[in-house]
Length: 366
Image (cartoon, rainbow, N blue to C red; front, side, top):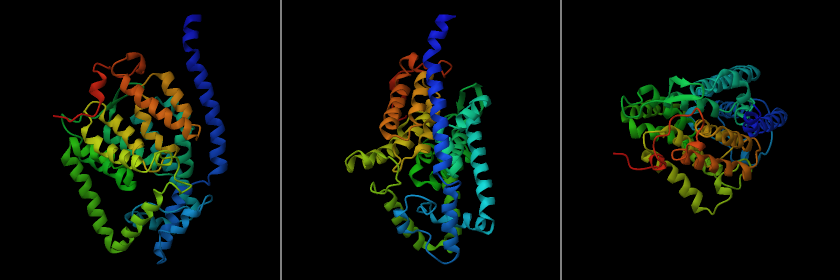
């Protein structure tokens, strides 16, 4: 009994520290961030657009607090949001935050996380912040998990990835993967994975997006797309205070750009096994703007490594300190890769690791 307790001691300590950190950051999130601010920004942009004003404001990049941050989504989002401007903002805020919570729970369920642990995950900052702020990232995470993981599971914490070679992913997965990159263009990695292994599904997803863009073009015009490109360029400027903590803040200019391009080129080279897990990692690595909720796409990888390591990484991702969060991300990648060779790095109840580390490296598939 004493020996078992001693073995569990590191896990218990990490759980306690993580719980305290989550409680501390929960208070910070609800007191610092305006509720539903990330849906209010598109609402304001859509209202300006409806009123004949510019939805993309360069001056918004000078805003450091409140609700006046820049609108960054593509122009075809405006016709979707515009009808919501007819409703009272309080109603939209409440419904949208509930939708973000529901999307988070759907993602957790698809990743085979037991329901009794859902409250603990929801108060973890990478979930708490986008749910409170109404950020679409949790909905994109749900789309990502539904695109690449099955409803079935081998047990708690054991999600089952969809087959990439037997029957393909299908039209629904192709559309969901397209949505991930269509809403946030820097997250096109999911569609690239689909395009590699299921060209038909990827083509259907792309066709749906193109059809929607063409259908809304008479409303938006081409000029708005040029304005959006200018806005996207401004959003990638490391000098913008709200860019988060992307690698462009810490590395010389050519290197982050090379990493972004490399993360995109690496997706089609991933082997079939764990391709979706590694795609999530590449999506994070290639993000030109990194915030705490960006780490959510590393959640499938967290489920694959030793629990003590996963808890340590989860703890680092509560800190809002890039000097802790980026090394934790690197540790996750190394442990995930090493788990193919050394079983002690893998989650005790994780999927069998019969291959070698070489099996998980990006290689040209036959």
